[in-house]
Figure 1 (cartoon, rainbow, N blue to C red):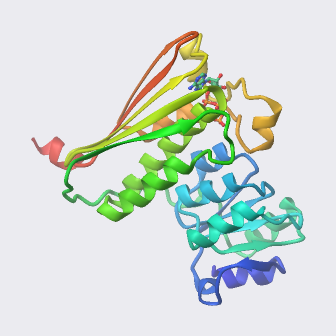
Figure 2 (spheres, rainbow, N blue to C red):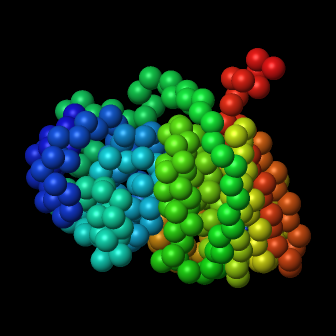
Length: 275
Ligand SMILES: Nc1ncnc2c1ncn2[C@@H]1O[C@H](COP(=O)(O)OP(=O)(O)OP(=O)(O)O)[C@@H](O)[C@H]1O
Ligand SMILES: [Mg+2]
């Protein structure tokens, strides 16, 4: 289905984007107000339907490779979200339909959700890179900046030519981990290390620490406040989603001191198996 069909079916107004972008092919749809669910369950090439109008909706769309965002119930993104959408070239539409109606109309007209798409993960293309390391400061409790480090990392990975399937996995994990620092810690940093064979993300924060890591790793477990939930987080999906996307994941935490994550992604899994 083309974005133009979606616009017509939902009688949606285009808030940002061009006529040419309406010709984009949309492979699937993902609808949620919880950004962690979108990070966990969407597929690249989707249209994101949401009622969450803050900047996190666009950051999540960017990280997950959404081709467009449609706000339901007549919602419009705030100025910061619209600016980021323009910068990232993501078309933005708004419809008066409720979420249920918008999903029903698109589904009825043939746009599938992820569980009915063929379950084929795109395989990563093997390329070579030069090594580099960079450290980024993460400000705790700053929701409006939350996710900006991961967005920058995505731009860098695209520039150096890392395969898109790996970019999606690495930046999804980075975004989940960064948002945990934003939500739970005072401050933190993300160190990104790329070698010809792997991407290594290290996150260290000065925060309350995690008393029971086993519990925190369970899907659905969350201590998020109502304010965090209002901003689209707190589904208890972040840590499990980081583990699912990584080739290797380690977590260390000390109560009252902070938390450290070590997240690794193989860039040459085929070559390794052959060795
Ligand atoms: N860096 C951290 N410092 C302190 N506690 C953390 C940290 N990261 C995670 N936690 C704890 O682990 C819980 C589970 O984290 P997880 O990322 O899986 O879910 P969430 O952040 O609550 O929701 P979601 O990630 O779906 O938005 C959190 O609710 C919090 O209690
Ligand atoms: Mg989280």
